[in-house]
Length: 132
Image (cartoon, one colour):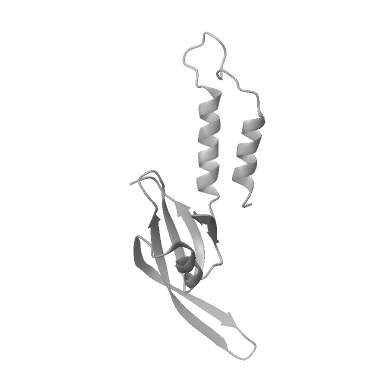
């Protein structure tokens, strides 16, 4: 699933350039390249489960320490809730409550903001937002 955005973009780059979509002379037409760019951006944002920090990558499953070592301090941190996980064993139930944190990284005026969600010490989600 991680390589899907790259596969979609590679497929679109392999297509011959088409001037526009639609029948000639029938109202407004949208250039095919605009649709291709929009599809690439959508795919990149929808399937983001990693974030690039310089020439290194952080991905879901990484720990907070690994993310800090790779990307440095985030722009902001906030605790957004708690999550309780219960494990059932034959003779007991063990509950563990962990904090859910959301970190924001902003690498400059021409970059997107990235939001990283941690459950306990583990990175569970990476979302790319717009530009501030």
